[in-house]
Length: 245
Length: 303
Image (cartoon, rainbow over all chains, first blue to last red; front, top):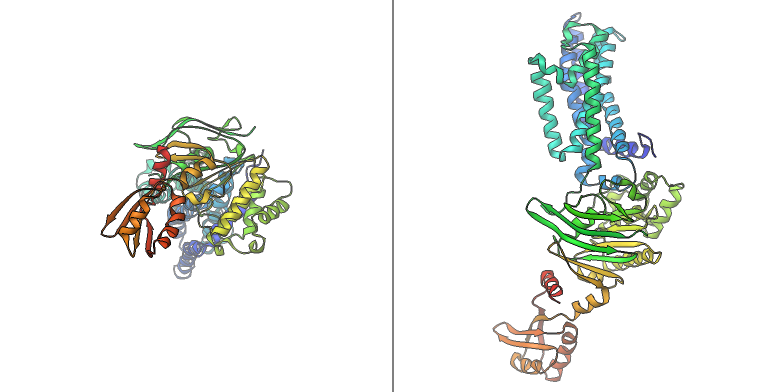
């Protein structure tokens, strides 16, 4: 009956997400990343080591997931929290349209606030259009799609506060700590799928891409499809939390 | 035929039973779901709107189950009680967005007509965040009516409205019902249904306690026995005079004045003033002693 993406939902979601002061907050980590890169480039001029180290590890396991977490849990979660989602769901709009529209907005914003800054930082550190910068851009765009699929699934499944808490635990513990310490965990890490894709272009061992490109793409796609599918199913079973405890 | 059929529907949360085996059939016209807070009205309404599955039993509109059935919103509308709208939008943007979500052929015209219907045209260009509670209610109703639904479910629509707005909303609901539509609203305030013409379903403790024509139930409500505390210049004489009246069932002299049990609210309040004047007694205080909603509903239950 209707397409995958609904313009009305996209516009309202964009306005809701960006009209909050959050937009300023979102830009902050990206500005810091670019600032650090500029500073390091100016001082430690010709190092070949730090750009893939910092941009790979910090970018893919901190900047990207945290930005995606804030955006991915708010595009749907904020409306569930304040109850305004009911106005959207009390229409014949397909539930998959709601999820995909939110997903597209969240991914686009994550690309704008994390993937593009990641490219800019690596372009400053190396040179615009370098293999590393292109690789990081492609990998970061892919990771933006992956992380948001997961976080939208979280917001459709858990109560808003919990979605953010679980997301934070996942990002800090799983992605930030365990996936870099225990190589096996990288097999179930959205950030490492992104790194694997980045490495396919950049070919830089300092990225610490533990997974092969094929594994990254395959596992990433499978998990994205699974989480989006579950998210749609959870939203279709959305219940208003009544006054009865 | 787009009626609402509730068949043996129950809903529980863990050990708490919110709705207990309710069966009702709601056709065209205005129907009020009436009951004290926490009686299960909202739970029932949410199940009707497909935002909650019944734990047992079935709920359908126009023969189709409401749970997991977004297509029903082609002909059904819900006005939620929570005051949550996209407050950063203007009233017109909000109603227009809803019209577009419904894929109406001319969304702008439909939005304008709906806003006109709730008399919000003057405020349509202001952000919803600047609206009063009553205005938010009305813009929510406009958004709900924008696609000309056959069934309209309203959760506590009169909340936060002043008496004039309340009458206006009641008129609007009657107008909609006049077009053969099914209008269902919930309310915990008895006075709200005073001007209602239609059916009332009284829900107490998750059960359907009474149902029927509004007139019969309203009569029950105004004629219900009442306890008043009356203070006057001469309580004993007033008490003696009162006990001679038909509308008074019992009188007790207490330290804090007279405690009067009236068998008929309306007659008692009318007669009291004349009686005291006749006996040259001046009234200093007349207080209804037992006005809690629960007592009223309990009385309705018993009759």
